[in-house]
Amino acid sequence: MMGERVGQQDRLFYEFCLEDRVPADHLLRRIDAVLDLNWLRAELAPYYSHTGCPSVDPELMIRMLLVGYCYSIRSERRLCQEVEMNLAYRWFCRLGLEDRVPDHSTFSVNRHGRFRDSDILRKVFEEVVCTCMGEGLVGGEGFAVDASVIEANASRFARVEGSEVDWTDAQRALRPVEAYLAALNSDDPPINPKQKPKAMSPTDPAAAWTTRGRHKVMFGYSLNYLIDLENAVIVDVEATPTRISKEVGVAQTMIERVAERFALKPKHVAGDVAYGTSAMLGWLVDHDMDPHIPVWDQAKVAPEGKFTRADFTYDRKRDRYICPAGKALKTSGNVVDGSAIKYMAKRSDCAACPLKPQCTSGRERRLSRDVNQDARDHTQTLMQSEAYEVSRDERKKIERLFGEAKTNLSLTRLRLRGLAGARDEFLLAAITQNLKRLAAIVAIPPPKLAIS
Image 1: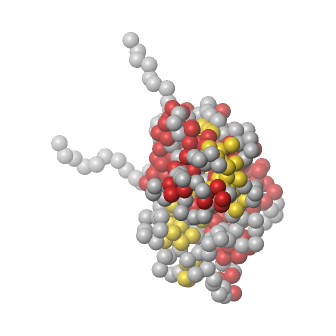
Image 2: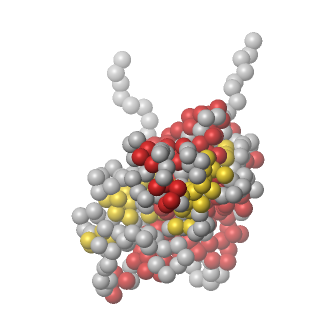
Image 3: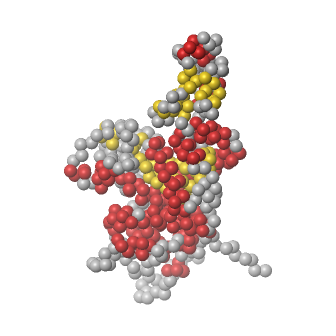
């Protein structure tokens, strides 16, 4: 039977409880159950003035940002509109029906000021990791490291070819340009000193010109994750320009920071072949961590028909190689290019050797040995172990986290510029992903018992 709608909207007073309007199984209710920001105001107190107009509650701003990342609302203007209308968002942000939502411009002021000066997003991230550890979600036995390319907020069509830009006074006043120019003189410049950039963005010069992103060419930053393999909890996150050397270098930084902040030291670290550099393998082995990283066996590489380095016996005690004919290849001990030690046979030995056609076309046979060859050999031995096979499969968890960040959190293109802006966005994404995982495992409501 069809009839007129029953109900009116002209009542003067309503009896309304916001708490009752948020379902018990709502994502924000479950996240709220595991999120503790009571310490936030005291932490930020030194950065707020005691005079003037009342400031916006920093906890409110953090909660609003988390809502935005949970529901892929990347625009602060739209986020303020959604919090204004959505009852669940208001409840999570501790706003009543009549409370005013902050203006979208407030986010920019605080992000570039108090939040960065206090590094508060990093502290929120670490508090969430500590909560995960307290709930037993972090095993600490095995870590995985990887990076994924995120497009920078810089047009690939508006670029300057080469590595030199004639900066105008107006450009130098831009925050990303100012930060970039200051970082050039630091111990960790955003560019690779050995290889100058092929192109630069005049609006975000720290972003790297890359072919690894979703476009054939674009400016990008790398989202670097270090995760615990037990429950795929992100234990550290960092932003770097999209360059392999930067991604590999920051892996060591993240491992050291996790050891300092959380007293976590894994027994093994998994990564793809990009992390199998000599320096990285040597550092891991020196710090008693097994590299579960695929490594190219250089000992079996040689021109066709010639002896490989694997055919030579290494005399560790005397630090020399013995060739198939029983002659010694000695070294001066000098390191070439900071990575290899050269070994050379006597020219007279090679001249009279019947195996020379199978050994070398030069006047004497020469070999090179990596300064971290022992670490490389150890890693290649680990590649045959069952533990390595397990790590290789579990390393896929980090790929799923990247997929979640890009698909569910819409983190395909940054909104903020500069390395600091990329770091802010990556920290918020990692906080959100950890909170979702924490809520899914810990804050699941108990099943209802059947009444017989």
